[in-house]
Image 1 (cartoon, rainbow over the protein chains, first blue to last red):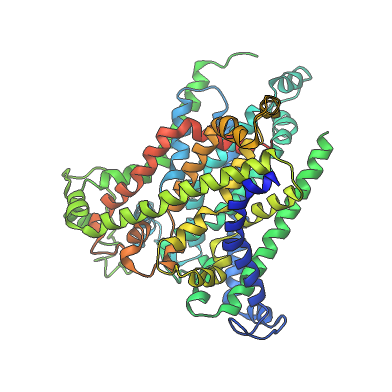
Image 2: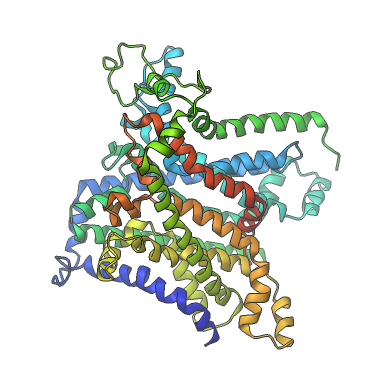
Length: 279
Length: 292
């Protein structure tokens, strides 16, 4: 009962603005028209899956998350491993790597444009090297540009999470390993990575949340209808909203939630199994 | 363990220093370019968005990325702050959206996080999992029903349409519960023996100890909501109510001259807040990432 008093403000607002809207959305996705439509089963889902722009958006979103999240984790882990070694100015360097996180996307978008434009700085460099220009934002490279922007912004956050994980590994594990003649690489795989696994689950979760936020960058850089390769599910849903195709939108949203829930459940289950094995 | 020599330390420092410098390039460029005259901006970056070579005046035409301006000038700032009332208006709009969201979400989330971390009740872990899942959802997922709720409450085209969902966002609950779970039970148990009620324990023990968590949450919420793009795009059709993030999104060729000063002013509050609260921020983020 006591707990309820503390929970009440959050729970009420959470229900009104998140849970109830979501359930309404699920309901809408099975009807044929907004408010008071009749039940049509999975028709909206069939339409949705038949829609080429949805398939494109879903494929792009998965591709982006599939490329950028592992890349980000590898990069931030390497950075954390390096920063964890003795050096000068460690705190200053750490600050520099986190800084992009706090810089608003909108205020940096002009700089990205200067680099990625057809007449931009990247192409100038290519030109210096005697190479042809690349249309960075209007070709398959556009996803590469997004990946770079995503890495730039999020590497610091993951890095400090990994640093905390690294510092929680007892030093005597390494001592023992050295005495038993384990090399650097063996130590990395058998001590560092094993004991970082709990941190890793959290980092994966946060990285995926942040990979959905890259929509902001895409929107600012390329508008409502960007090049095909970076047309994400969020663009699709936004555009369905403005074209009032509510049924497809809610069906897409429900599908996306279903996928996220499945993925997170799997992740949490894997984490529990890992914990049980460790004990 | 043998102590690494200063040479290896130096090599590592220089290597990471170069990397760090590259990371800072976009930020530094924004500030240095904000001191250019509008005319110089036009000369250097006028070619942006001119798709073809022909429009760019031949095959070898490129933008001229300048680190330092030819003439230092405060022209852009004068234009943005004094001559263009729109900017200050939208800056204020951003503040008026973000401050209530941060204050509200931190307060609401601290209460709920305390219940999740330190009290026992039926279905606690399942409910927390629900918050976690919600936190992962992109904004667009509840777009339509949210629109209907906002419409029903009569909040369309008002800041409340963004502020209320912001206050009840799940991220704060998640982050603070992770943080509070690290506060040892011994503290709360000792207070309980002394006869302290749940509210006293929350206000006198948990809150003061959760200060780094609260600081980290404040910075992260500030970053997230200062940046809002999707929500105002849908809920605030009225241009005079839109926040600064959209102002910068619509800066076009003509207005590019003042874009850097606007951007610099826009990122400054964030950067200062972060530098001020950095040690708390790092501690808060790190503790939230370790399972309690």
